[in-house]
Amino acid sequence: MDRIVYVNGEYVPEQDAKVSVFDRGFLFADGVYEVTAVLGGKLVDFEGHLRRLRRSLGELEMAMPCTDDELLAIHRAMIEKNALVEGMIYLQITRGAADRDFAYPKSATPTLVLFTQARSIIDSASAKRGVRVVTVEDLRWGRRDIKTVQLLYPSMAKMVAQGKGVDDAWLVQDGKVTEGTSNNTYIVTADGTIVTRDLSHDILPGITRAAVLRCARELQMKVEERAFSVEEALAAREAFSSSATGFVNPVVEIDGKALGDGQPGPVAKRLRQVYIEESLKSAI
Image (cartoon, rainbow, N blue to C red):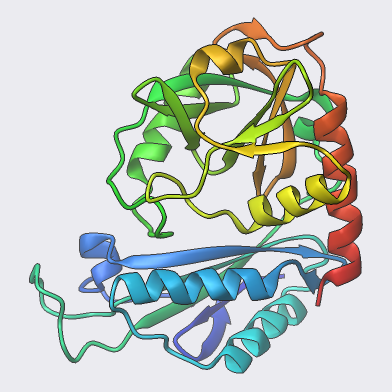
């Protein structure tokens, strides 16, 4: 079955999905995106992703091309048309097509594209074995809190990790971990405290991050939102990351040093279990 893609009001086979070569997403990375997980044919944390999408658009003075209800209907149609049971829906909005100019065009119509990816998220191999990461200097722009399509440097960092035979990279600025290439990062200290970077322009306000922290507090786990150093991470009892595409992923090695016994830790495993349980209950 051909995958069906949504492009500006039409559902078309992926080979027929096209946008203009003058689209500012192509010319300037002038666009934002969201990724919503799908479990059992239902959307996980959709309202959170919608709120962040509106914030990203507002920060870039970009128009929303449809209403919230219309966007939900499009997501549900994408699930149905692609018979998607488990996986993700990617949404991208750009400022639209206009002749090349650094200044924002006043009359461009936003481009809206959605596509699906079928993937096993719950029964994830990486969650079972744990993820190995290396640290890489964070050279991204200064507004990482906006979920833009400017993903070249995270892609470069990911390739550095693959070149070293590991799974991912944690980005570091001034000796402190900011986030992973596509995820928020956490450590668990010797006394069991979960530490994750506090929200600012330095990191993306992860929708899964918010849900995971809520789960942790409901489980009476101690949480500190602050920056942590690479040295703290190397000395941690365990570590993990969170994202809409991976939920909670245990990290078992940083820069070649095994954490704990080199296996996924109990805090990460428990949070993953609870997050999945809650997501299955609340998905729409």
